[in-house]
Length: 357
Image: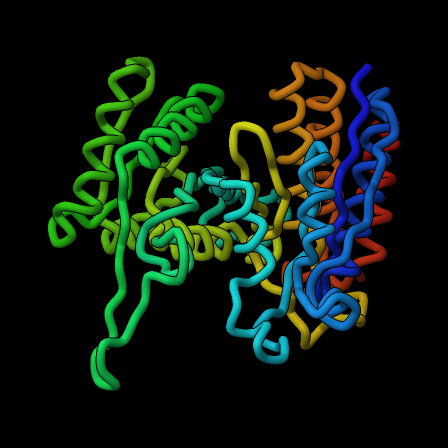
């Protein structure tokens, strides 16, 4: 029987509330599935690490992460870090870049009993995570933004065939396990070479998956389609910036950014990370919605199940998902979903649903 050692990085803001919620629920699911108890390894990161180590991501943390099966990363509040830490690559970016976590998988699924803009939404955005138009991801060293004069700012956008090929395969493989439909999002009418290359390479890879239907939309049109008919889409694959924007929109359409999970992964490593921020304004008040972090943890368990052919881990992931769905359907939800439950209350309701089977 496979046992797992998973890193725990609490982060900042609401992180120390929603990450323990997720580990408690994962423990309940593991027990119910007959999975060996998870070995949770707490590691320093974020504001607390700056105080003790003078860096938001200590080298010892990166070394320890390399030897673990996966990690849970709480949200960070890097905008509040003192300089020079504020201007450096943030903790998520540091870990993502160090381990080449090229796929950012972001589901958006409406829960029965919650307030969704488009009920029935159940899609996944597959976001290329290492290139594109974000300055921290478009160069090996330094950033992709620079100013040759005080009045001129320039940003690079990088798209390469190998990076598109691997994210496209991730999208098509995922679609095969879902409804077998992939939508490519680009802006090839204007960014003809860069996002045109993205679109064309995705279509080329798609020929290896004749059982998967393919269509494509410009990014501006896609925002309209999501608002009008998010329930019509299955897997959406796109470049970095477009994926970031669309996934936030899709999360709100499904009910709240507080329910938007994500997984950052490569072929060998994976990191569960809620798509939302650290919400410092509600930190420590026991009112944060932990669903995004909980469902990100379920995604990590599912990734481990696929990597290790572990049916127990797959069962645990399913139990976490069903536990959250049951709690929300029964009227237990936090304020952002229209309920009154605290973080602690919601966690207890999910654990109870898992134990009830």
